[in-house]
Length: 151
Ligand code: IDP
Ligand code: MG
Image (tube, rainbow, N blue to C red; front, top):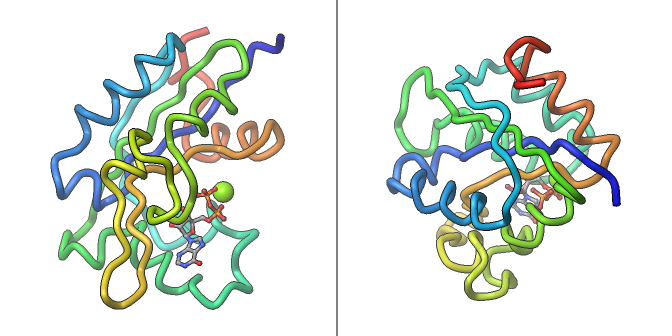
C-alpha cells in the first residue's frame, strides 16, 4: 500500500453554507492525517492553473467563477486548502467525497449529502479532491510551499 498525499479544497459553496467543519469531520473519519492547512486567495491565475486540463470544457468559465467565489458574492474569496496523507489517501478521500455530479453522488458522501446543482446548471459539489497520483503531486505543489506541509 502506498503512502500518498492528496489535495482537498473546500469550495466557496462549502464555506458559504458553513460546511467546513462537517467536511473536515468526514475527512478525519478516514483515519488519514491532516498535514497541511491554509486559507488561500484564489487568483484568476491560480484558478486557471488548477483547472488547466478542463479549459476546453463548456463549463470551464463557470467553474473559474465558482472556485473564485463569484457565484457566492464573496470578493477576494479565500479557500481552505488541505493536504491529507496516508495509505491510499487519494482513493480514500475520493470515496468520502463522492461523485463529481452531486445528484449522482452516493448519499452519505460529502457531495451526496451537501452538494447541489443550481438552476443555472452549475455543479456545487463542496470540495475538490485530487484524482490520481500525478494530479495530486501537481496540485499539492501548486497550492502549498514545501515548508507548509508537515514532513
Ligand atoms: P472532480 O472534481 O470530481 O475531480 P472533474 O471532472 O475534475 O471532477 O471536474 C472538476 C470540477 O468541474 C468538478 O468538481 C465540478 O465543480 C466541475 N464540473 C465537472 N463536470 C461538470 C459539469 O458537467 N457541469 C458543471 N460543472 C462540472
Ligand atoms: Mg478532477
